[in-house]
Each structure stands twice: as C-alpha cells, then as structure tokens.
Length: 237
Image (spheres, one colour):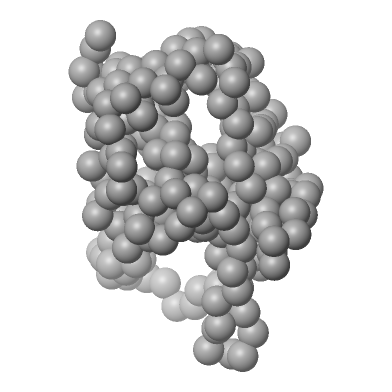
C-alpha cells in the first residue's frame, strides 16, 4: 500500500504532464488517505457540528475507515442529504449552508485531495481562489508586482456560483481527464444527494453543496475553462 503522499505526488505528475487518470477510484481504498484527510478536517470548527444524521468526528477509528472502504469497494457507499441552514448576510439576505454527516465529509476530503493533486498543476497562475497557499493577498501581490501600467479594472461576480454549477457540464469536464466511471458516479452521487430543510428532502438539480469540502475544488475545475478561454481567446482578440 503506497503512502498518501506518494499517491498524491503521482497524481500531481500526471497533471503536470497532462496525462489522464484511469484508475482514480482505486485510490479510495487506501487507508493512508483517510488518515491524512482526518488530520486535515478534524480541527475545523465544523467537525463537531452534526449533520442530519447527528454524526460527528467523535468515535472515528480504523475500523470505521475499514467499513467505509469496504462499502466503496463494493460500490455500496451513498452520500446522504446535507442538512441545510440559512446564514444571515450583512445585506439582510441569507445564504444556504450545507452540513454533511461526518463520514461524508471524510470521504469528500479524500476525493478533494485526489482531485486537487491532479488538477492543481493545470490551473492558471492568475487564479487565486480556493487554492493551496493562494488567496486575496497573493492576488493583490500579483497586481502590485505585474499590473503597474493598469489604469482601470473590470470587476465581475458569478452570482450563486456553487448553487449554479450544471451537473452535466461538471461531470463532462471531469470526464475529459478522469477516465474512471466509478469515480465519476461517486461524484454524481454526491452532487445529487439532495438536502434536508426543516426535515423535508429536496432534490439538488444543480450546484454543489455550500459547506461541502469538495465544492471549492469542483468550482475551480469548472471555472478553469473560463480561465483558459480568457487567456487563449479573449485577451489575444
């Protein structure tokens, strides 16, 4: 069994070389990835916030990881609906926040590790959101360093970005590089698990869960096509 870092480094190299991923689902059977994922999300504030099932990070064990892997190996694992709560915004409106069960968070974090390792080397150097060691400060540093002759900017906002992701486009975009139907079915199962609001199940016909650990990297993969279009088509014209 390869170490978690060895698996992720192989994926990074495949991403750098623009090679497809043919057996990504098999990596979901590696306990080392779950231990790494657990260490990354256990200290988060939401780790002890229960979802609809009431499950939290307490009680996690190697036996629990083994049962998750067994369910995945036989394709019996199913993401559960997230518990949706509404968070007040400064403008008086609210934004929905999804609270998945702890097991779903853990599996989602393993998937995030795999997808981020492969796709991160492919993302634009001008993209800073939801990326390792990047953010508002690195974006501003780039502007200060490289955009010295700029006199005006165009500011845009993608309204309800997570809520608006088209599932078909998302899966087709992933399928361009991930040639693994089992992994794509797992992503689709997560996207279509639905949500509970006032204990009533609602279908998710589009979008990725607000608060889901996988949603930020999925949105970056989705919007990478926009970055490529702007850099290769729009700016030269």
